[in-house]
Length: 167
Image (cartoon, rainbow, N blue to C red; front, side):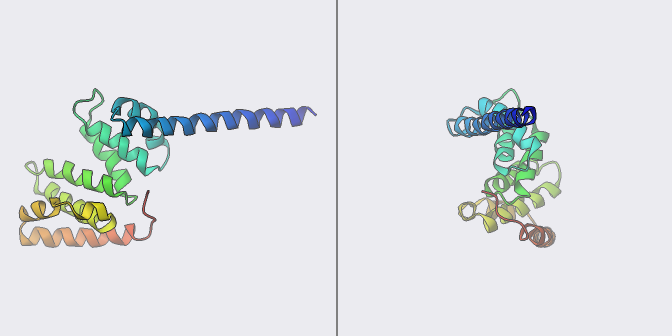
């Protein structure tokens, strides 16, 4: 009898905990959609770091990239956007491309990677394909850099084609 009570108690605590987590996740999504980015960040940060959830990783990366927020951090923005991008989340790929293109004056490598992620975003996400960013980035590359980018794109596609698109 004591064992049964103990199991019921564990079940109730687990259910309450799970419900609270789902609620936090939902609150984070609602806050993000309402453009309350600080609240979204605080509700979704644990999901972005503790799970493989591409949406929370994208939102946390987005929040870290927003320089108007007190949490702004370029390195962490890129980290979380890359995590979501590597799960085929098109919005993250597009934003990562923009972040890398902003760094082009430091090193041409970033321009190539910006083009890589812009192309991948367009390939995996129809919404991203209407963006003219790819053409703008491509125009800043010479032929050898475009060839280098194409090789990277093909390698990334081999990996990304094996996983489901993150929704």
